Image (cartoon, rainbow, N blue to C red; front, top):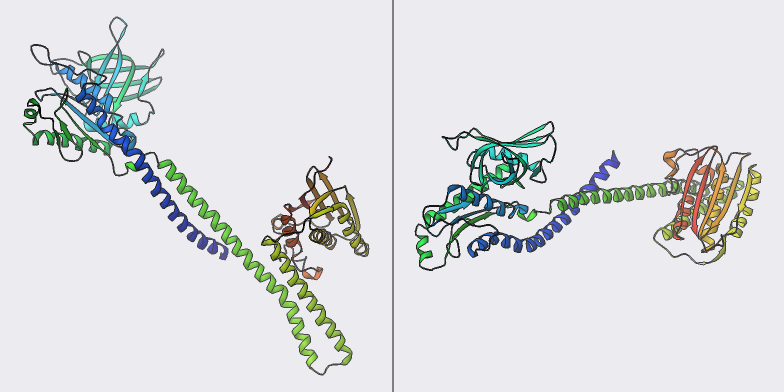
Length: 545
């Protein structure tokens, strides 16, 4: 429970710092995105109106015949074309664009729609001809949003039936090149998708006709970021603002006829341009979060990275604090016993005790003092190694060094009825002789202390290329798996049976790891059947094999 509280305290601090840094990074990304996107936004909002006023559009704007008026279906065909050319304007920013075109007398010729399309429709003779599809006159706002939700489910708004059971069916009224759609159904095998369904009667004196198409392409202003409901509201606002500009400037055509070129501004971003080949009104909207366009994946990924970093930092910090606390507790515990013995014997020496016992008490005081000195020395060695203290580098014959270490312990092995074996191959490296002798002695001594009487301790040394492997294996009880990874921590005793009564300060394996890592190596322990193996890997000089 205490460890969990410690971790969550560390995590709270780390998360706060990480979120602050994340916020600064996102702010910088938004600023950079604004610098990159604003020029593109300006270019998009003026591209189509400029093309219309200058007469450089990719589609033809209907002109009246010498006598009479322009047919309504030609105006509606223009509306579909305007929708096709403006539908994707600002869409990647979550915005929308609306455009309306006039003739020189101020009559509306067409405007972009909420939903339009084009299709290759079968003719009675089996051929196909291109038709423009107009949905807005028949669909209600609910129908428009329903169609937008369906189209949002497709990455591509083009549909091709090919050869097979798939088909595209629609009903409506055909006028010239335009079909006023009443219903439209897509058949994909067993799947049936109703894109448009209306009971509107646009031409009361005519029944709706049935058509079948091989190809369909849709353009919908209500698809994209923000969802159909919000985009429908934006579309309404844009149209209302353009209507207001017209209403507020009833004599705008007079300026056009007199050659005065003016742009009439309205509410929001709506304007009315009376100059050029054709007068044009346009409007655009950008949601408040348009600067996030394209940044959502980056924002989510960096937020996840910030949280992960906070978790990792909290884990490192809490682990370091736990290790520090365990180290302090272990050191205090190791010093507590000799200090208590020293105090007890010192107080006894102040009393009038039997002179025969005085020497015994003094020997105990000296022994405990030596024990504390050894502990303090080990602590200082460990501290120097862990803070990156330099180790001496000299050419070493590691086989001879290990052989000498085994010889020093041979008498102790004999006394404990343990067979001490060596399997040493030539190995050479640059290293600190005293530190490596300490590594060998500590590992061998640890193996002898925990080997069962009558068992064996095997020290093996091998080199392949630049890799030197030293293993110290002893027969005896295995170490529980949960303790293996912590054996090299200072003062850690996974098995209470391995107490200080067995000798040592509890720092031997910690010093082994620190010394090995200081030489650029690593070490670990594994269980085997009937024993434990400690392995040390060190970088050596290049060998012949």
